[in-house]
Length: 329
Image (tube, rainbow, N blue to C red; front, side, top):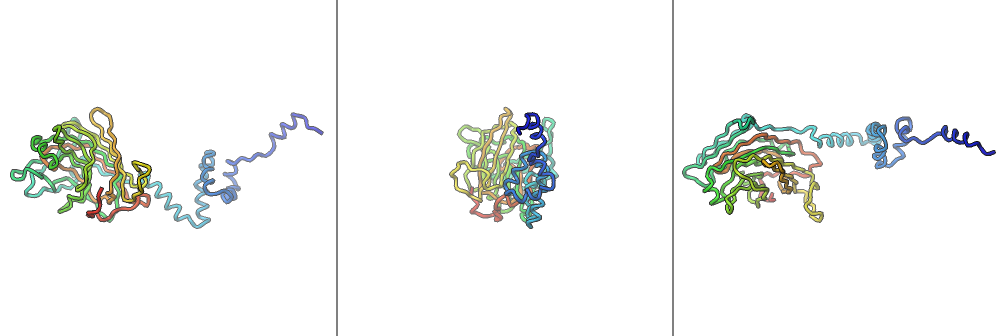
């Protein structure tokens, strides 16, 4: 006998339905997890909030059942660490945050003071030319912060503001490659190690009598970033991504695990950020960084902040020989 339309509708309403979200909550969790491929288990969490809330416990139970709990927990911890959970920060507005390194006797005077500029606390570094050595004014005088190489630290981000004044424009523009100001460099520092520094500096530009901000590594070609002017404040942000696959300028570039991706943003008084992406072969652990002038100049630094943390497996390899001559850009 054919059912009446009303009864058929009632039967359809009361018939059991497959509710995957409810299955994920009750006694069927373990059979469901055992049945689904691992990638599908990960996708189930996209179906509803109930699935997402339950998914971590399901994965932990699976890891325990298959003897992979220790490795799984290590992976969780490392993933959280990559978000910056255990990062350290250095704040460099105060002189007592730094260690002063005096120049050699044949170099010019080097002074560092805390000053207020427009209500902001700054460090003012003044370097003067020595009477008998007009070229190569200051190789070792600097404010530095040092770390133990054994810690295997990776710098993650650097932020600071700076402005500069050239105390000898005629001399600097007559021989621009022998002058530089407003250095923010990564070490090592010390006797014979200045040729392994890398970082940012301002150098004179001889043709137009201007100045330019560059990325440099001693012994390698400089990378032009932007033109800058005296007396102007610039905000700098450097982001370092240690993942070897973080950035490739061209898809066909060969894979090089020794390269380090750096994104640099500089903003002047016009408020428009100037962004540059580059890659270097300086995958060294963080051993030191410092600020100084190479030649006669006054530089103000403020809002100095350096973020760093322990090296992880996701950071690729480190070049632990900080003095290797083969570490070229």
